[in-house]
Length: 379
Image 1: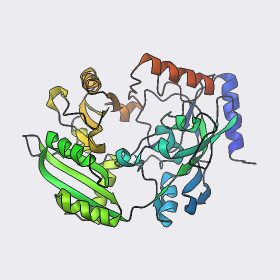
Image 2 (image 1 turned 120 degrees about the vertical axis):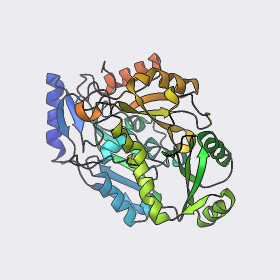
Image 3 (image 1 turned 180 degrees about the vertical axis):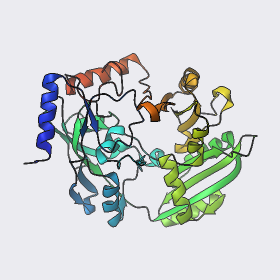
Image 4 (image 1 turned 60 degrees about the vertical axis):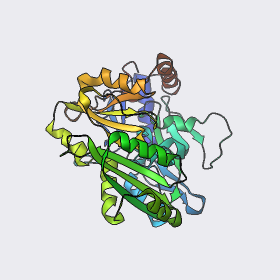
């Protein structure tokens, strides 16, 4: 019997009976994102520990309240990793990011465009639904032919469908070869052209980041490209791509800062208190977007992810620019996020998609007790 889960189950059962909202929370490191934070806090951190880990099978099962750093350390001891590089966003005095929060948020780091997202590595989950029923979906194998892949619905659901208790994940060995190349004095259009050209070649591209140099007014910036894979493939790519090769030990901290949004480009927003952080997801082949005020974004994912700092009043223009390119825009960190909790916005893009989300919510959580208002005001 799982004695740590029993009180949580009883609390969910009582909340469903009384229709009392519950705010599922691990370390709280992503409280800044979402429409609102409502309900009594239900802390998942008592559900902690690695249940099973088979390095030879590249599979780990871990309880949802386990600190993400603890899981990553255990994998590192075996020369393995979570290749999608989930951000922690852990800042004092908040607690450590948890594995359940990683899945619930569904956020991936710089390598996402090359290796896939959180959901692509999610093999199975165990969760409490809104009726306090313990349900298991998926398993510990790569191939799932038992029906709908329900487990992946939990990635990016922000706890609105259920309380995760355990997750099973596919992991991968750390790549034997790695290098970062720097290309200076390159504008956004040229950076995109290079990334598109490289994307059509058999190169071990893993991550990229372009940002405008603060001291330059002509739009010139610096492009960083990280290569990972077989040593021979990385060395060959370094010779053909050009650029300046950086020291791996030194640049590792910069890639971590990119993942955690602590690069000066991100932290500079503190000097402009009227600016929010917008997340634009577009096809990697999209050209330079016509952004309001001529702002220059920070590019990741080989051009597929574009971060923009702009006032919240620019939201309609940003959404239109993203949709014109075949993508979407969402408010990632609102101006008031650090003062009043979550006040971001999810872009569900269509009424049909919104209805699907609402039906899933009703199926998993008929009383609407889990994280109400986090993703949509109606549920």
